[in-house]
Every structure is written in structure tokens, then in C-alpha cells.
Length: 441
Image (cartoon, rainbow, N blue to C red):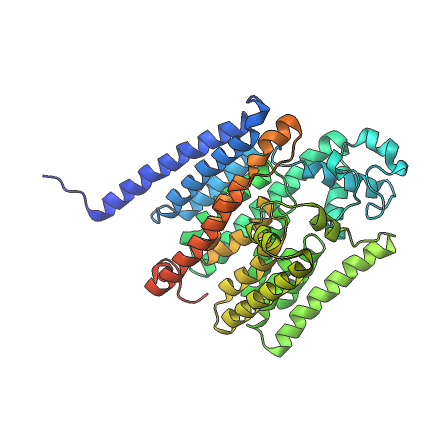
């Protein structure tokens, strides 16, 4: 009688699981391409369905440690390339990116002039821009504006494809460098959480959001930090400030690992880079500060914590409540950093603005993905997995032009985060993740 060895049984399970994941991925890709065919009122639902399928696929492969991670890297590259021509439909931000770039190339200041400014009337006949953005000048930093201008140089038709090329290259570069970073830390078994992240894949392909460059910034900075190239790491984080502010927060916890000399070099390189970029923008005549407070004052989306604060407290009290919570979380991050729990410390720091902001679109969470691969935890995985449920708002927005966010996704996000915190506390005691990861970050 023939008995299968345990190793062969594990290999068979890995292979069968891989094929199951491949089928789910193919179905998701087909659905994303068929979005223009489906009725517009199902746009958000299709996104959510595809995200669920890709999430299941990612978790299946993550729990198949016998699969070679080189193949996972190749699969991630293929998925990005296959989805490159897919239609952009999760937001119209890419139109705004190109508009801001076109304004800058035309010699106007996008930080002063809004799209409906009379001076830009002729330009708007050539370059479309979202109607809901028409009243507001740009809020993006000068480094982002440089990327937008580079894409806009290709013109109104080809510009969007050049932008998608840049976004795809940023995402793929993050994955390749992330592979090396995880390999150096003996954490390559968690590579699928980065390479096959549904949020990273979809927000690159059918979102084309600027935040993919935040992922690139943190991965490159961490890789340089691992090699003790602190000046270069500081320059990368300084550059990230000129593209998107959030990645700069990782500098705080990282400083706890450095002596005075290296800390000075790291911080100095960051500050000099920021000053040079903003200085050049000022020399070019740009008032490069944006209108972020106006944006947060106008919009409410995807933030269960802020919604709860706004519901419980009076408007005059909200800022104080937020400051107290932020101080508590930053203190917790500092405590974790001192205890050498560096990845968790960085995650807590990054979560401060993401939890307390009145606006948390799913793509804002992209910056968390590399740290989930470095230190898997239920809380962040759950948050990333359920946040795209808020895309249900696209059903009415695309079909009827009605922006009406639903409450039920906020409840699910809140329950997922709370449940994750409880389970992480249990797993920390039970050493579950220590069995899947190195004990120390």
C-alpha cells in the first residue's frame, strides 16, 4: 500500500491552494476589465467583489510556505502588467493630477488658481478636471506636482498612460525592493502580503493613486536604513514629504535605533532635502503649501473614529480630543520603540493621522502594507481588508452623480479594528505571530 509522506501531502496542498488562488485572481482581473460593460450602479460592488477575491487569494498563498517566493514575485509583476490597460474607475484623482501638471506647465500657479479661475478657461477646454474639484487650488506638495507635470507633458490623451506607467513602476519597484528587504530579515514567507496585496494591486491599476509613491518611499528608506545608509534614507524620506506627507512619520520611531551622530545625519539629510525641494518651488514662483485644511473641513469619509468623536463631542472640543488621542498614541509608539518593537512603533505612528482624520479613503492605507509584511498583525490586515467596503459609495456616484457614503462600512471597519486589537493581544501572549515571524523586529 502506498502512503504519501507528510512532505508530499504539504506540497500537494500548496499546489492545489495555488491553483485555487490563481482561479480567484483570474476571475477578479476579468471583472475589473468588464466594469465598463456592467451597469454603472454596480461599479462599487464590482470593486468590492474583486477586492474580496484577491484578498482570499493572497491569504491562501500566504499560508502556503512551500511555494517559492521567486514565483510569487513573478506573479506579482505579471498581474501588474496584465492590469495596466484596465480602466481607472475607483476615483477621478488622476484627472486632477494631470490638470495640476498642465497648469504648472502653462506657467500658472496651481496653488493659487483653482480650475474654475477665468485665467484657466482656455486650458480647461483642453484638459478635463473633476467638477467637484473646480473650486479648489491644488493641495499636493511640489514633488507630486513635478510627477504630474512630467505626465502632463505627454498631452491630454497620452498623459494618463504615462501617469499609469509611473505608478506601475513605483509599485513594482516597491515589490522588488521589498522582496530583498524581507529576505535580508529572514521574513520572506510574508512576501505575499506585499506582492499580492489587493489594495496595492488595485489602487495601482484602476486607481492610479499618488499614494503608491508613498509605498515606494518607505520601502526604499527602510532598505537603506537596513544597510546603514542613513543619509540616503533621510533624503528619501525628505523627498517623500514633497510628494505625500504621511511617510515622513516613520522617522520618529526610527530615530530610537540611532546614536546621536547617525541621528543627526539622518535628520539633517531629511531637512535639507525638504528645504531644497520647497526652496526650488518657491524660486519658480509657486506658493507650495496647498489647502489641506480646506479639504479636511469639507470632506467626511471612511473614518469611524472621527465620526464617533464628531458625534459625541461639540465642535470646539473635537480638536482637543484629537490632540489627546494623538499624544497617547505617539507615547505608545515611543514606548514600543524603546522596547525595540520598531515595526509596531512605526505602525502606531502611521495610524495616528489615519485613525483621527475625518477622511480616510482606502488608498490612504497603502503606506501600511510594507509594515504588515515586516510584522503581520490582525488589526492592520483586517483594516486594509475591509476598508474598500466604503467603495459602495461608487454605485450612486458613478450612475447618478450622488455622493452619499454609507454608514454600514464604518461599522464594519470599526468592528474589524477592535476585533483585530483583541486578537493581536491574544496572539502576542500565545506567541502565534512569533512562530510565523522573527521574535524581534
